[in-house]
Image (cartoon, rainbow, N blue to C red; front, top):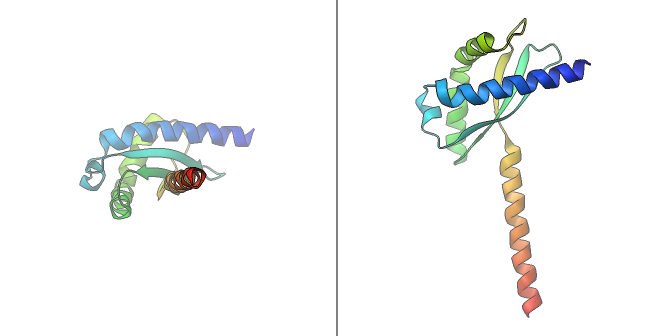
Length: 124
């Protein structure tokens, strides 16, 4: 039962943050990014800390800037979450880059390259 509750809270927090980040965060480091998406949330068992995974479209340096902007805005976002989500304690937000998307893109590029190599070998 506890795992189901945590999963439900994770989904609630992700949904709320997905709305809040683009609409309410005014930090220029976050606003200048073409795309900032909240891809997941993992809360601790006591719901005191939430790891928020974000995907940033762009270079690694820009992604690090966006992370710094989100960390700066974490107090504001936590207060906004407190108003939107009814929990006894609003969790502390810790923002992290979601490396899964970048890893998936690299794997896809490698597979595509291997596929091209295979086609070239078949034509020879």
